[in-house]
Amino acid sequence: MTRVLLTGAGGMLGRELARQLADLDLTSTTKETLDITRAEDVDQAVSHVDVVVNAAAYTAVDKAEDENELAFSINADGPRLLARAAAHHGATLIHLSTDYVFDGESTDPYSEDTPRRPQSAYGASKAAGEEAVLEEHEGGTILVRTAWLYGSGGSHFPGAMLRLADAEDTISVVTDQIGQPTWSRDLGHWIRLLIDNRIGSGIFHGTNAGQTSWWDFARVIFEKAGHDPDRVLPTTSEHFVRPATRPSWSVLGHSNWNDSGLPAPRAWDEAFDEAFPILFPKAHQ
Image 1 (cartoon, rainbow, N blue to C red):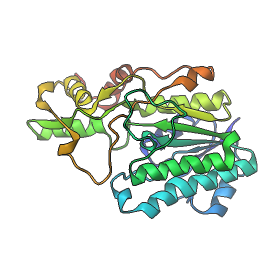
Image 2: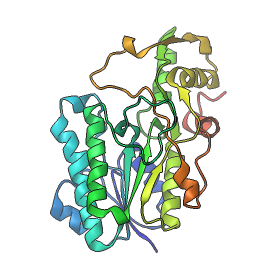
Image 3: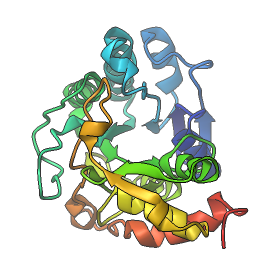
Image 4: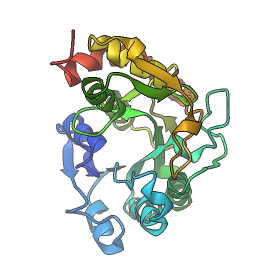
């Protein structure tokens, strides 16, 4: 049976992965049980596994502008240690990354080999993490980039929209940020496929297919919950200035799935149709 070490098991994706990998020989760790920035602890944790799935991350995008050192410690130094240990012990590393490693200025889906050009401290820390794991263990590392993630047991856009729907007459949502809403259950499934098919290395984009804006996505959420979607008003990013730059374009390509003999991700709206009644049974109409 495949022996798997899962880091970041306390987060939204981590909990989903723990559920989907539970029938394997799984060791789940949280930041309380494994500090991925401590080399000795990391080496010991990795020493008896076949696959490491690193879902541990610093994800406070705006705070990273002020907590640069902490963000790089968790998102770059920790992954380097995991990759080094995986290389030493002959394990495969599956490392979760993000669309923020790109510049957000494209109009075509980003291919897996697009050069990194992050525009924020958070994005720079995740880009540095990608570079680190590939430097340490390129032949045994799988990068999985995701974006616009939602799921059970965490903070996410659909949940925020439904809370606002109950509290406000109208809400304003940006039309000029385009991406791919991604269900954590689908992402967990894709990672399980990589493990079961013994994929040893490569870069994969773990997002649902297609594209939409935050505004259009919010309208879909309102409609599914029985609210008037016209209560969602269009606006632009210039009216929502934040410390960290948000990518205008977060659409990722999926070529490497088919190239590796695996099914490409399904469309975001198909996934959300299935996810909504599961995540929000009281709101489902």
